Every structure is written in C-alpha cells, then in structure tokens.
Image (cartoon, rainbow, N blue to C red; front, top):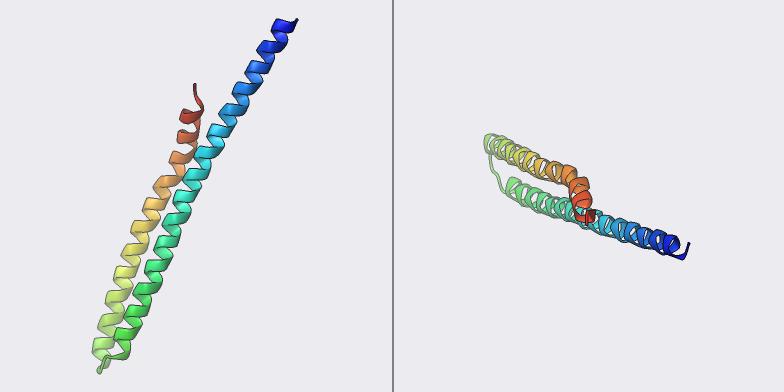
Amino acid sequence: MVKNFEELQAVGKENVETAMKSAETMSKGAQAIATEVADYSKKAFEDGTAALEKLFGVKSLEKAIEMQSEYAKTSYEGFVAKATKIGELYPTLPRKAISRSKP
C-alpha cells in the first residue's frame, strides 16, 4: 500500500512538473507575441509621425497625394508582414508546450 501511494505521489509530481513546463513555454510564447505587437505599434507610430511631418512640408496637392499614397502602401505592406509573423507564432505555442512537457 505504501508503494502504491509513493507511485501515485511520483505520478502527481510528474504531472505538476509537466504542467509547469507547459505554462512556462506558453508564457514565453505569449511574451514573444506581445513584444512583436509592441514593436509594430511603436514603429507604426514613428512612421506615421514622420509621414505627417513630411506632409506638412509639401507645397503642392499632387506631391501630397503622392506621399500619402506611398505611406499607405508601405504601411499596409508593413502591417501584412507583421501580422503574418505574429500569425505564425500562434500555432507554435501549443506544439512547443506539448513537446517541452514530454519527458
């Protein structure tokens, strides 16, 4: 009976350790995603501010439209690239957590 209890205790300990490893991996993955989002937000704000400053210095309507179009294009491309990168991080979280938790 004592042996069964010790085995049960060992299994319980292994399960707790596995859960902790999985939680740690998920936390690191979520932190990586949050960092990517924060980096993108900062860059988007800086790029938008720089574009607005350039726009204020423009003398013609045609040049303003050209600059705005270029900014919209590069903004969209940057957004799509970052969204793709972040989207690729999400599916890897459960896989990493599961693979890390295996003995």
